[in-house]
Image (cartoon, rainbow, N blue to C red; front, side, top):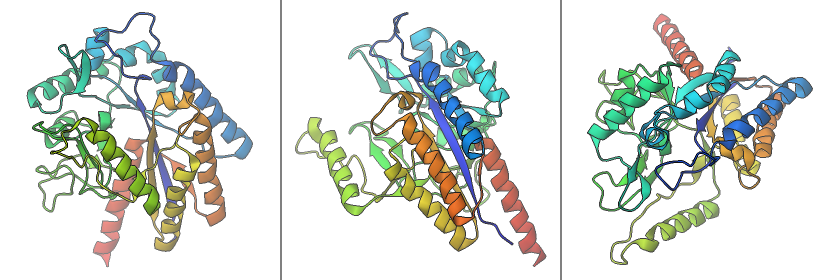
Length: 357
């Protein structure tokens, strides 16, 4: 039986174009151009690819902000949901999924800056409870990507409580130090996680439980693309030198671990994205398997013209289609929840076949 197929999941962290400097946004300050201007341009590209190349239409997963920072800025936890409600309803009607993208940002009134408040479980729970309640007035999200890819055992338990079915925050093999003396010294820590889908352990969200003590939520880590050794080393050195500029010489910090891979980003330069696409199609052919490309972007990237751009997005979509024709392997776009359901159905079917033999 031919099981070769590529399933593509594209998420959008529907953030503002930049993080505001103050704890209130001026009424004339436009920080949502990526949504207002970028999304319509992207939809035009999708329609063009369907019409001119007969490519499948990419249904996306839009992950909307609803959290404490939005409340502090706009006095509305779900401000981006409510302010652009017609946009999200239209996308949802066309088959796109509406998911959730909560951030753990709080305002430091002494230093006049935003900071990720990751070491206060009570505050985190209040942020998540209020954020989910606010977004649920219009949408009942079943997918999630957390802000800055931060996760914890506690947050996963909350997501299960909200009946979120799938999370795709995972950055396989990656860890980033946030600040040195915090009770939680990392911004994210997925060092022990692989690209394989799994149900998180109740005691360590980064790995699959080896028993039935797992959480009822599927983690679908983001896909990786290979990076040449020299490029990986330069990136490792650059990030760690930059991070240590404000650290005492006597206390150097390894802020980023060395890895010869990076996350596949659909709006990033095609040279980087294509390596990952090539690997997925080769793996599917060799293994006779279904492989997944799980990627994401931000709305403001659609307005840029550098390492990230809307033209890169279009080129990368075309490359997936071209590789499908070259290898004779079909591909589909699924939303995050659709992909999770499809994966579990396949897993169940495979178990039935094994039991029969």
